[in-house]
Length: 273
Image 1 (cartoon, rainbow, N blue to C red):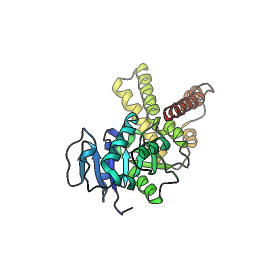
Image 2: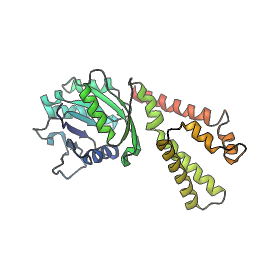
Image 3: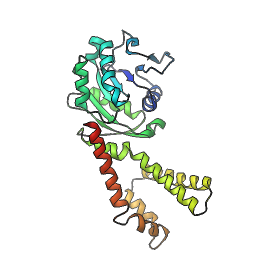
């Protein structure tokens, strides 16, 4: 793989656009062709192709990043394979889609004319502001260079955690892929509770969001375990202890968070199947 590999980004919605922005902000951005029917504006840093037929004939992607809707993935792979011809065999696929396995995508690539490695990642929505975290899996048939480069591509929009088994991405999807929604729900509920106790909507909103932001900063900046940070806030017989006695009851958060992750993991498995 060359020192500055080339990328074909298929799909440039919120996640694909976030990845693209991160790559372009790099001191040495890779060579990029964006395949997206809605995108315009080729320039010196990247080329826009609204259809696969518009991919430059001189361009051979080292990595094809699939950021399309899962239902359209096979057709996208087929169209890219036809457009690239023999160049397709020199690429690897990096999927950032939920619910499509390496095996399924590799099968689609084989039907399109190439048996190539398929790597998978599960980023989350904070990637759009450069604060994401991605679970990443590289199969045995991917080279170390391909795995390293894909890791670097994902690192452009946040942290990356590599998993050893593709099946681990089911739990990644449940914990961090869907995880921002759990935090947003907490903010929503804190705001509503604040209003119910007489705070103005704006005050409750600022307090809830500021609290979650500050707690997140502490989790990120400090080496302490989350459990230790929780205990440090909780004075015996104090207000926090009173609230936690409700939230930590056996049938409250301990049971329901586990049930929620189980439900999300099961659904991720269903989508993959």
